[in-house]
Length: 158
Image (cartoon, rainbow, N blue to C red; front, side, top):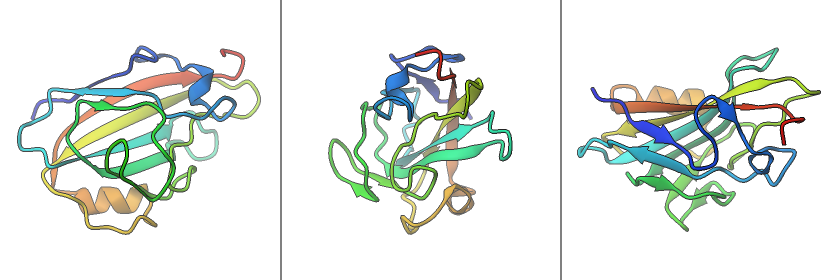
């Protein structure tokens, strides 16, 4: 299985995420580029997790699925359980509750965030009231590829 190549024009992997993608800024989802998608891919799933959360490491900020196999997820995807423009996306329950919610760590703590993209061989039949764990469970056995993009955020690094 080949890996998906995940990048963003907004920041390099393991670099500081700009404030506009945080809860202290405009809270826009960043543009995400996805390369080397397997031709058998039917849909994509994306998650965003806070790996530096002091109480719940891996705290989920975003879970979205049934995204068409596109090479670019545009910046500032709209809020809502089901969004049709600029592309179809179904968003579940996370810190964002049916939307992207970017970094918002307390104090000036440095947190590390992980965007994970999954290429699947199916569309998922699951309620938009589902959380990341439920989505991961239903996609088990259907993952063709995965790829990750890491970013850091700290309020003082605007």
